Length: 221
Length: 337
Image (tube, rainbow over the protein chains, first blue to last red):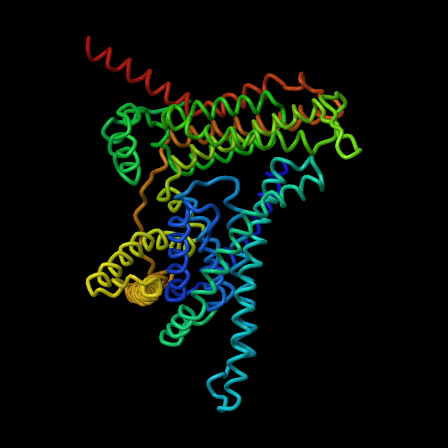
């Protein structure tokens, strides 16, 4: 019963998100970064399956949100969860995963918009200030990687919450805390994989994505 | 119900067509029996299938009566055994049983409610009481978990991505397109990755023994993969736009419909919807006073009507397969005489 009502709530939120996305009528061009990054994320998820909860997918969703806007991040998260579960098995967790990953991407999009507003003209600054600008960029990169790490932890906690609501809600707060602490090692694994993967790819892939954005005139949405 | 006889040719074509072919071939390689399994259910319209799975899952999720949950579990297991083979059922149980044990253990350990004492544990001066009721409740929830997982196993088998997209496309065209494209891009990206690695190997870029060289080659490959995929994807998008994708409504082109809503589908929809309505209403009305704590009461609350409706709803796949088998055997007997 609790699983049904909470899942219906989650599905309603997802339906609203998809409805808003459909209303914005994105051009196929703007769809493509989302599609490519989601495909890469799913491949990463499938390839890394033998290692328990090692998820390169989250890092790619953060990249999608950070570089292509909050809508792109949200859609990338939704698509990654839905399509990878078509391969790995659907279950009552699918809507929760879609929402959780969608929110991870959305948050990355909000972060990206904030950063780009403040950090728009690094290249125009004169030489003595360059060093300061570079330092600031480095700090921002650290913030993005830290965001990805924390978001991975929260993603895992949302899924643990789904388990709790579905099968253990009678156990109360003690049960919830135990659920989270039992899932904690797994979530740390996830966060560590995001930390590594995002740390390695943020700068080289970020440069590429930024260049593609300029080259093809893709607006963030 | 007014099931019409579907010509064998159409049946064979639908079974053989679409993505089910590969799946069945794969299953067939494992065992001949699973290839020859009856699949009348897969001839239904995807919308009917979706309705069935939604109905079954909702009924399972709203019922707390252990008997209903057991019924759901048994019928889901029968469905899995019928359509996917008993081996698949055993494989599912291999990970289902540990999950069920976790759920039961969780409820016993952390649920203090219940009147009948099972055991008391002295731990650092404080005593913990485990109750029989929490064990029973945990077992019921574990039944629910197992039933849901088995129904999803069947969902996975029948709601293939083409069927899902067929249903999703009219409701959310852009998202459905994105799903289809992601599905296309997965093998494409894999292929490109292999191409890049092969090219690098032939150029001896990653032939260095050192870790650093190998790491560098790997990042280079990933970088190349990203640019290649992105550039190509954007070209694909432009070409789609050039060919009139997302053009104005009056110029919209017609599209191919892979499934037709037949009178059989209408009958099945009516049947499933009626049974679903009866089952939900009676379960809601009768098991409201069902309680697990402090002592379990309400074992007699289940009305025969609700039980029968639930049984008929969940046995729907088994029933139509049985009917199909009966028709087949009768016809072959008539023809052989």
